[in-house]
Length: 116
Image 1: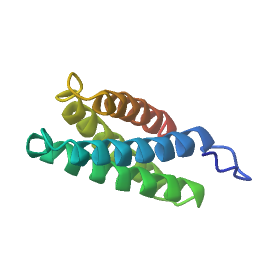
Image 2 (image 1 turned 180 degrees about the vertical axis):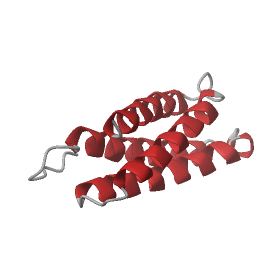
Image 3 (image 1 turned 45 degrees about the vertical axis):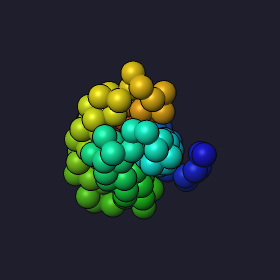
Image 4 (image 1 turned 60 degrees about the vertical axis):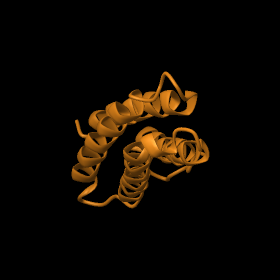
C-alpha cells in the first residue's frame, strides 16, 4: 500500500514501515492460529504487536513531518531488530515467522538509512 506524499523525502521508509506493520500483524495472527505451537509463541506474538505499532507510529511521524521522526525511526529500528530475532527462533517451523523476520530486518535498515 503506497501512500503518496507531496514531499517524497521519506516515502520509501514510510512504505517499508507500513509493509512491516502488515507483516507483523499477519505473523501474529498465524502464531495465534497455530494451536499446536501457540503456547511457545507468546513472546513472538507480543514482539510482533509491538513492532507493528512502532512501525505505524514511525510511518505517521514521517508522513506529517514530525520533528521527532528520526528519534521514532531509531526506536522503530531497534524494535524491528528485536522482533526479527524473536521471529527467527520459529522461522524453521513457520514460514510466516521467516517472512516477518526478513521484513523486520529490511525495515530496521530502512529506518537507519532515513536517520542519515
